Image (cartoon, rainbow, N blue to C red; front, side, top):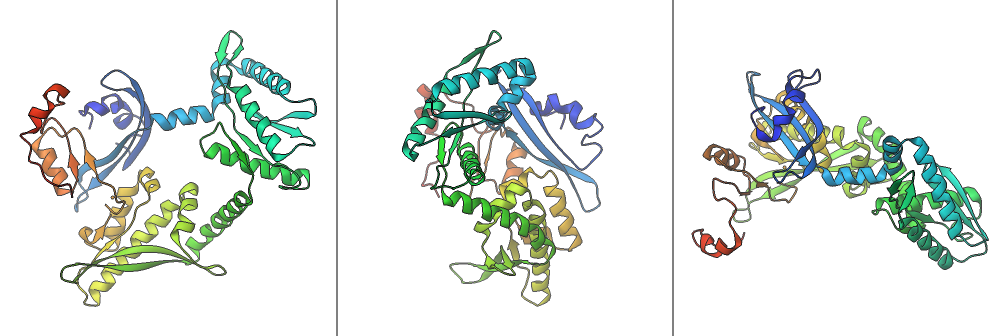
Length: 391
């Protein structure tokens, strides 16, 4: 691993640190590196050891991901924390004072401004309509758009606004503030720097998410989750080829709940990790049961949530489940049910190509096939490739 150019700067972290790959079966971490054009970027690596039948280390499997955009988004979310960390709390306090002054000067005489949290302000507008409230909110956003000069530093800030109007969205301060907060949360989730008016749908969404989160934790331990199996047939012969495992939640009061109604909450809360392992084990047991009933060796497919790929123990945990349930690994199918094509970049050797073919990779590119071709030469160079319809 240490010989891979992409990982050369991680060699010390991977093998020499106390929490390294040498001490355990998996490692996950973030790092800063540079592209070939020397542009800096953030990367994340999740890597696991894979063992053979005799418990000897056979190879590694990992996901190497560019997380630059999510890092930038995180930096925007932590804007005030970053300002305090880099410029000091004194400058951060000065910025907040300047922001408050600018916001106050943007309001009409009948408007009141209050600071509620480290970087949250509340505005109270009396005797106004929802439409004029939206206009004021947009004005405040435009006001925040202008850079601020604090302690010889030019600082850019942006804002998000959640809007609730009485009596339409509440008749008491507590209800209005709660609903404005829900609208603010939605505005941030939608990409920030926008105005979101409260709707009852936001209330229902928040209530349902809370219900799902509280009940889903119990469902996993109280045997409320169930697995349905949908047969997969050969369309030419009608022969049974395998099954797809589909998760269902049989709630004692709500009845059967479909995955699309709770999987997103399971992903947000991290519950998808233990649920995913439970499904894999149930699928393995069903395949073994069907074989014992004389139905042959039927492959059972399980769907993996993208969130599960952030679990560094994913490969090891599935391998352990296969071993504990004594199921031949080829009877558990995963990675293509995501309905995505897999593209392998950087193929340089015949051995790499053979490995990718064995693992049913869809598309490949690399120096083994061709180097990058200048546009002026492209038409002529591409004539040597076989062409046909795309499947």
